[in-house]
Each structure stands twice: as structure tokens, then as C-alpha cells.
Image (cartoon, rainbow, N blue to C red; front, side, top):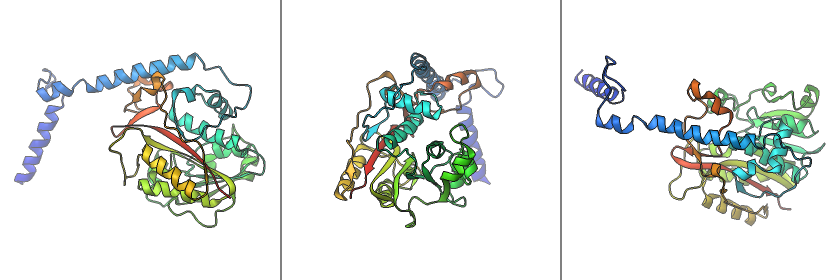
Length: 344
């Protein structure tokens, strides 16, 4: 009983430390610790508001631009940057998907994957592709609309992690969730898209001879950095010779500590350099590897929580996020893309 009373006292003391006012709502809290931290939340909102307002201004200056041609620039391995979002290739693929080219790393990922499919001539009738961890993303529908045969995969519905992904609309347990009617007719979708349940740590040997495969921010969720790197190597097994493997993931661009052996791991430059060398030794073709982070103002803006759940009075700024770089558990991160051609 004494232990419980002590815990209650501790809990009450902590609650008093972080209250703005006393229990009677009369006097402001003047405890030194509270005086030190009380404005942190306001500072976070100030930082986000200024960064997001800059993103809105930059977006409005170019929002109507769509290139009249399909860009053919080789992208290689790279991190997402402001200049990429403002590029012709990103504008083209955003227009194809009917999304806005806002300054958000998820927009960059979709454009990066589609662009690499395009320059390797994979968006054509009769090509076969497999998507890992597709969730409810639009790429299977877009590709089916161009006659590509797609196997969309996700975790089995009874997998322990599937529940969390479903809650954030990042898991699919039926084809209906990945049909995007503005990109493909129902008939073409049913003709070209199928769904299979696949654990990315244990790819079935029945999946073989695809022209290409892809994943978008998926292989950092396989349990460890090494499991993620091994997945990329194993993904080459499902491809025919000359097939293309395209993936994006989380990139901690700070030296030193990172996160490993966790539900979301953060890769660093040394891990990508090691992966590129492993793939070359296995006879695969690795595109040019770059770690440039960009020089624009939004490349130097690291977004901080809250993400997408701002106060109602500030909800309008969510329309134009500055979310190319961000803090993941206090570490500066962005998206990183890689593309590998299977050797003969």
C-alpha cells in the first residue's frame, strides 16, 4: 500500500510540474523546470509554420508547370532533395498520377520509382512487375492502366505487424483497396493485377522471372539493418536477367548513432555503400551512387513532429508541407532511392 501511495505522489508531482497553471487555474506555474520547457511546443509550431509557409510560396510559383515530354534523366542512387521535387521528371510523374508536386518525400518516392521504371522501359504492355509491401499505393493501378501485369504483395492479414499498417492505410488485404479508378478501368485492373501475401524476409521461390520489382519505404521495417540489406539482395532472385529492382527507404544522413534491431531502422551512408559493393560482387549492375543532400532552403529545413495532426487553427498549412527532410526519433532523415539491374 505504501508503494502505491508513493507512486501516486510521484505521479501527482509530475503532473504539477507540467501544468500551465495551478489546480485552481489562478496562478501560472513558476517551477524552474516548467519555465524552461513551457515554450518548446510553441517554438515547434513556429518552426513548422515558417517552413511550411516557405513551401507554399515555392509551390505556388511553379504549380502549373508540366513538361510536354517524358524525361529520360538517369537518377541513380540518391537522396530526395528540393531540386528533385522541382524537376521536370518529378512534375511529369506527379501529373501522370494526378497528384500535386508538393515538397513531401512521399511524392518524391512515387516519382522516383516510376521514373526508373520508365527509363528502363518497364511501363509497357506485357511487362511483368512485382511490388513489395504495396499497401494501398496507386502504382499497381497506374501500371495496369498501361498494360503491365502486376503482382501486388503485402503481409498476410494475420501477421502481427499487419494490424498496425492497416490502421494507417498502409496494408491491403483485398484488391479493392489498391484499385484507383482515376488511373485504370475496373476491367483492366482485374485483368492485370493480382494480390499475394508475402513476408519480405522470406520471399517464396514461386515468385520468379519478373521484369522488375519495387518497394516504397518498406524494407526498413524488416527488423534490422542487415535484414533490410539482405532483402535487396534476395529481391534480385525474382528477376529475369536484365531485370530491374527499385526501392526507397529511410536514410539517416548523420554520422554516428542510428536505429537498428527495431520496427523501423535507419540506414546510413556506410550501409548503402556496403550494399552497392555486395551487389556488384554478385554480378549486378549498380547505378551511380550519390549522397548529395541538396542546397535549397527546404533541404536545410528538418521537419519535426507533429506530422499531420496540427491544431485545427493551423490545419491549413498542412496543404503545403515542408517534409523532404525530417526528424525520426531525433535523427535527421530523408528518403533514399536505389536501382539495380540484374546481371546475366
